[in-house]
Amino acid sequence: MIQIENLEFTYSNSNKKAINNMDFSIKKGEIFGFLGPSGAGKTTTQRLIIGLLRNYKGSIKVFGKERKSWGKEFYENIGVAFDFPNLYLKLSAEENLKLIGAYYKSGRRDPAPLLERVGLLAEKDVRTENFSKGMKMRLNFIRSIMHNPELMFFDEPTSGLDPVNAHIIKEIILEQKSAGKTIFLTTHNMTVAEQLCDRVAFIVDGKIVVTGSPKDLMLEHGKKILKIEYLKEEKITSEEFEMNSMGQNENFLELLRNYEIKTIHSCEATLEEIFIKLTGKNLL
Amino acid sequence: MRLLNAIISDIRFQSKQGFYLVYVIITVMYLIILSLLPESFLRIALPLVVFSDPSVLGLFFIGGIIMLEKGQGVIQVLVVSPLTTGEYIIAKVISLSVVAVAAASAITILSSSETINWFLFLTSVVLTSGIFTLFGVVINAGCNNVNQYILKTIPYMLLLVLPCFSILGSPLLYPLTLVPSVAALRLMLGAFTQITWYESAGLTLYLLLANYLLYRYAVKIFENKIVFQD
Image (cartoon, rainbow over all chains, first blue to last red):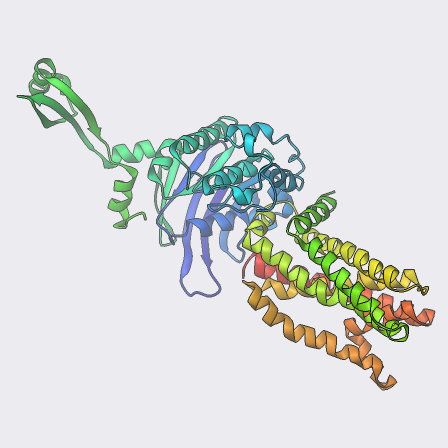
């Protein structure tokens, strides 16, 4: 779906390369997470793929064709949700959807089901200037998918949302993936990335430092240890065991037999820990 | 179809933002002022007032409209939609021309009972509106706030409005008609007074060409400064 090769980009007002020799590809039907701290080059890469920046070096192929060769028809198949709400404030939620939807060949769908899905149907006639940030973000999000695009770009899609609404948005993203859609997710929220992404790329100073599935990365960089908390003489006590050959570990088996177990945890690394380990930088 | 939707969207946006209400208030003010003028003075004042409507007012309106769209972030959304820059700009030109025609016609009909050349009148309002709207797009592309826009508009205003006074002076100043605003004013005056067919045809063709070239330039500037932010 997307192939990036030897991508380089420098802003005209800077001498420093914002993107430096970047390579990656995204398959159809994949959720690809682009993770990194602010200023690492996440948004620049996204803008290059979307076509909002030009004069890049290297190659960006989307739908099998070089990005710079695409015209405006490219956007018929693209959905973009920015990380800040951008709505006609004097228009209602429904008017906003219909107005932008009118520019797409397949955008004239009834917006009611989507509005209902994100809990905005009752407010469909309310001007968006009276919406909270969370409501605006939800409207922003459904506007980006209402024309049924093949490829979607979501920038911090759960930013500003309460846990219930963040869950709904994550559910919709997974449904889109199940429908065969490809999703490019830009975030510095590691939990969202862990929950949604098939693969992630860590980006620092315009370079990708590692790519892989969250699960594989977490196992590879974690410790093969099991941590148990149990009740001993009315105090919570903790112990760690090597995961190899645990079935033959008498201490472990005795602990399971004789004590009240409170928690059991494996010690795979979190994405945040991996990121800090590989880059020496914090995500925020 | 997309262009038609863009025009409808612009009309809806301008209406909801209260631009038409401002237009109605200004038109009523013009009508009151014109009704106080003696008939002899009205013959000169009416075309000038009608000319100022799509030009000076239009320039400020397009500035306000694009600035509001920038402020609300919707330009970002339009940029990643199939709507082309050309369609976006033409929709602005047409939607503002429609309002300019309505306001200019209302002022003319309600202020004077004298017959005018309506074809020339409408042609000059539309072409004037186009030129000033396109200038507004060009000026606006590099501005981040209303203050910047107003400041940047001043030199354009001087370059476009000052040469218009050449119409009152010597015929030797006729070459200043190359300034599109002067050509537009001559065409407007022609609708109210006598003008030869070849002069009106020449002015119309020249203004059409000026609109086309400005449109091309506005598309280029808009893409450089707003779409790609070079």
